[in-house]
Structures are given as structure tokens and as C-alpha cells.
Length: 503
Image 1: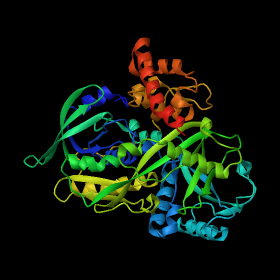
Image 2: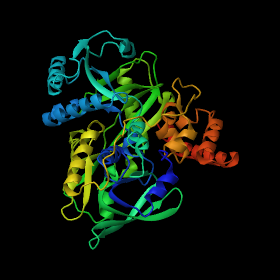
Image 3: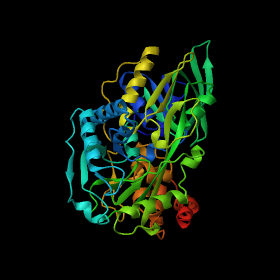
Image 4: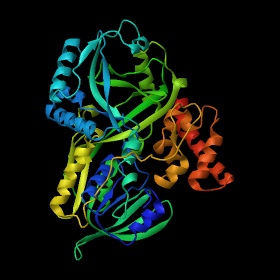
């Protein structure tokens, strides 16, 4: 079966019986899809939008052991996250790599160098000394970026980061591993209920991309819908002792200075928090913010005050002034934080634990996953798979081979102004479930994050390239592709351009 061919996947799903249906194609759902498929379960993964289009497209792409949680003495959480980080480094070479992080304290900040140095050595010990030991360094290549006289010696420690992007990392658990027994469908929603007479979930699948329906049956449902998990539980009448509190995080991508090589962590001087300047291709990502949004939808929309906050803080640290004209992209997402059902919002978002909770319903064959982090996705999937195994055994044979290959194994093209090649639109459409122009620019490639104005260019100079990409993705003529790009341009002008004009 050709990986990522939606029509073929749809035919494989029609009128089928599955062991498990996973709702939500973010990092938790994708990792669980791979884990269950490898154990021989017949699995269907669905997402009402594109894969990795929620929280999993707006992370910091860091695989880290949770250093910030040491401030509240969450040593157990830090120990677990360090173990998760090191497991990913062992098992996912080529997708996750060690990276040096450089903490830059303020000379007159709240944290003394001695305190930070002691914390870093304890952090190293909690990681069982598997990473390089921390050390101090006063002179380094990135030092020229900083305002003189306000920062102390940097403190360097080793963590890890994704080699490509969070979207491609998520897709790597899905696209290469679709088969007749493991089926994945983006732009697919489900309705239905549990039949106690037949002991199965009877679900109607709706293909939101092609307007078609089919019915399936599943022995168990896993809710991996991330920030939408509470809504999904409500839709199917599932009660839970947990829910999600939401934390909004915004990054800005600025033109990357030539001397920016390291991941720099800056002391904020308030809430004992920190902000990060991370080199990523041709941009430097600065952020993230930590605020409580009023709704899920609000959380995925950057506001002018978010960007003003980031600009104000970056200009406290960098010698060269950064203003809105240097912003290449805005990256905005919502973190789902697991809290008890009676939680009331009266704290700073960073004070909430980044733990995950995996809850098996006491009555129905339904599993809900709350919270979690990119760093712990493999362990979260393993724990969820064990809970599922306690409820039902796989109906199929154990898969012989499910390699951890990156989904982009085929065609690569050059893009104006980018040193790195990007996956070709035709390849993404045929092999990687790419259905829309935004799927390609935002999640199959990094174009909308690396090229100004979400790939259009500062003066729409790339509109012609986008038209050709749309022709490949939609398999349509030039006039229809121009209409697609016109709608995309209107969206950029109404959302991206407008918020920057307000800064």
C-alpha cells in the first residue's frame, strides 16, 4: 500500500472492524498509532483536521528534561523527563540529536551564578550523568549578539532537539507505517455510540476533504485529541476526573543573525521564567509566552500584545534593535495541561505540572490521554498501550517491521532564498496526506515559518511558485490554483498582516 494515499486509506477503512480507533493525530496519537501497530493491533487513526495541526505544530522542538520544573522541586518529574529525553536520543538517531543549551543569567538578576550552577549539576545527576557535564563559558561566538555589561558568564548544559520540525516528527510516526491493518485519515471526523449488545463502538466516519461517509466498528477508542480532548469526551458522553487547562505560547521568528549558533536561554527576571532564542534554519525563534487563553480558538491566534511582549523582552538582551519589520513568522499554539476536574485558574501557567494522565473509563472501552510533552511522547504511548493491552488483546499478527524512517524519503526541491531543500508538493500530496496548500507550507515543509508572510514573501513575490504548488497538490488547472492562492493571500492579510500592523 502506498503510504499516505488517502483514497487507498479510505478504501481500507470502509466498513471495517478495528481493534482501536485513535482520535487525534498530534504527537500523542501518532506515537500511539505506531506503538499499537507494532504490537499487531488493527488501528485507525483519524483527525478532524490535518495531522499535527494543533499543539504539535507550535512547540519549541526541544527534547529536554524539564530543567525549569526544578524551581518547584518537581524532582520526580525532572527525573522522568530526563529518562524520556535519553530514550529518544538512543532510539531515534537521525530524528533527535544532542544540543548544547546556553543559559545567560543577568548580572543583576534574581538568580545567582552559583545557584544556577548547583541546579545544573543536580539536573545532570537526575539525568544519571548521561549527558555532558555542565560548564561555564564567558567568551563564545553568540556573545556578540548581546548587550554589553548586563549578562554574566554563560552556563552550558546538554539537552536534545528535533532535527527537522515537530510536524515532520509527528508525521514520521504515521505516513511510513500505514498498511491494511494500520490506517490513517486526516480531515476525518467520527460520530456514533457504544453498542452494549455487540460490545463495540459503532462509528460513522465523515471525510471532510471529499464529502463521503462510511461506517466502522471498534473494540476500543483512544482519545488523543489534545486540547480538544474534553470536547471529544463530552461528545461521546465520557466522564473523567481530569480535564485540560490551556496555556498559550507564542514565538516570533526573526531573521537569523549570522553569528547565532547556540540555543540561548535568557533569564527573564520575573516569575523565575526564561525565554529562548533558538536557531532554526534561516530564522531565530524567540519565545515562548506563557498566558491563559480564554478559549482554544483564542489560544491559536497571536495577539498584538503577545508580539509586543516578545519584542520588548528580546530588546532587553540583544544589542541590535529588533522591531516588527524583522519578524519573518509568528508561531502560536496551545499547551494542554492536565489538571483535576475542579481546578480553578489562579496561578501562573508555568506553575502547572507538565505531567500526563492516562485514564481508562470505568465502564466503557475508552482511554483518554491528558497533557504530556514532546519529550515524553514515546513513554506516554507505551503507558497507554499497556493500559489498552490490559483491556483487549490484538486481533492481528505482530507487525514484522515498522522502521522509524522519516516520511520524506522521496522528492526534494529548492526554494528561493532557502539553503535547505524542501519536500516537493507532488510527493507530499501522493505520499504524505497533504490535502491543502497550508498543509504543504506549514506542516510538510517549513516554508511558512522560514519565508516572510507565510511563504508569500514580503511583496508577494512567491505567489507564482505557490500557484504551481497548488496545481500539484489539488491536481487542478492554473486558474483554479490561482483562486486557491488568492484565498491564502487574503487569509495572510487578514490575520498575519493585521496583527503585525497593530504592534
